Image (tube, rainbow, N blue to C red; front, side, top):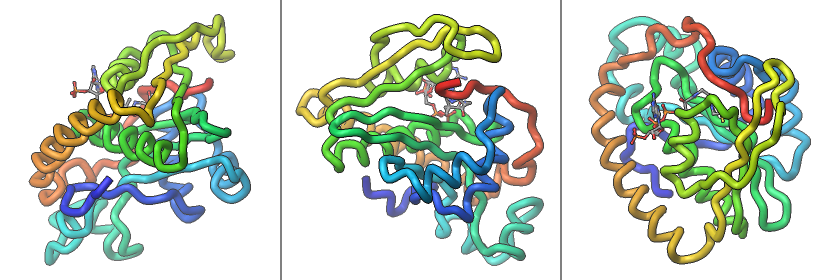
Length: 225
Ligand SMILES: CC(C)(COP(=O)(O)OP(=O)(O)OC[C@H]1O[C@@H](n2cnc3c(N)ncnc32)[C@H](O)[C@@H]1OP(=O)(O)O)[C@@H](O)C(=O)NCCC(=O)NCCS
């Protein structure tokens, strides 16, 4: 996907990103992965592909002076803009399994989750996958709605899959992602997503949402438990 000009950019996750990723993880999942799990995935698992999303420099960082808050702190100490979301998958032969996806609670409903999912689907297609699956808590209707939008259908259920609550996992999958009906659907979604993210540009320019990153309670569910 060509991300040039969008309000956000997607990049491969680096070891130096893990601390920020885990901060969002803790806000998003009742059973968060520890930092070591992410470090292992990106350093030692050749089948793992993990991504982070940050605001594009052009929109937010190249302003003369950030207006306030956390964004200003990031600019003075690190020069990188904060991670706002991330996702990852494992690939085996032509099958991809999404292991995680999350967006900072302050920045949800702006299309960032779709951007991460789109990037993962496009990466999966580019490495020859034809099938993507995942598990999601039965109660996580928000995530299920996102996946349905991207052509995932319920293909199974794993009883009492999540050991913390005994909740079932719903298994969802998108098939034939390398073929034309799915490609056409993805292209339509991509066009709509680009429009939506372009509408978010003003939010990013204003720095909206950054000042309280890292301060909200948990609200989500971890894929796979
Ligand atoms: C799931 C998650 C990644 C979505 O991220 P997001 O940036 O808010 O998603 P988007 O703005 O791109 O929304 C994409 C779609 O998700 C669904 N969705 C997102 N928030 C929703 C809500 N509050 N209610 C209903 N549907 C919602 C909708 O289908 C939406 O499409 P629409 O805006 O065109 O209606 C985010 O809610 C999250 O991080 N949740 C906690 C972690 C989690 O549950 N991960 C999934 C584990 S299986």
